Length: 96
Image 1 (cartoon, rainbow, N blue to C red):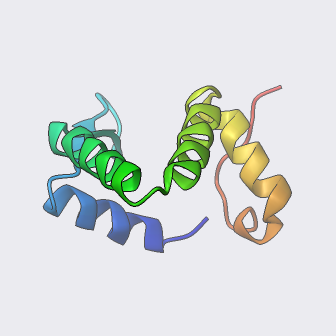
Image 2: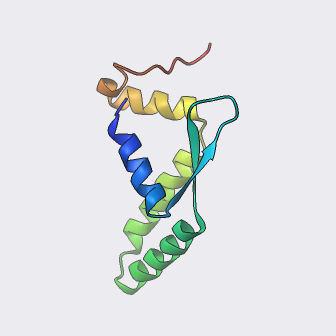
C-alpha cells in the first residue's frame, strides 16, 4: 500500500485527467479517465508516430490491455507478488 497514490490521484483529478466517481455507501471513490485523457493519449500517439517511437507506444498499449483485462483483486495479487513490500500494510484480502 502506497499512501502516495492518493496524492497522485488528486493531482490527476486537479489536472482534469481523471474523474472521481463516488461509490454509494462507501467513503472511497473510483476513478476513470476523462475525455481530456483520451485526447492527450491520441496526441501522444501521434507524437510517437512522428518521432518513430511506436515500439514504446505499442508496449505501453500492451501493458494497458493486460491491466484492463484483469479484475482488481488479481491486479493486486500480481503487484503484491512482484513487490511484496507494498502488501505489508494492505487492508485488501482476497476472498477465497
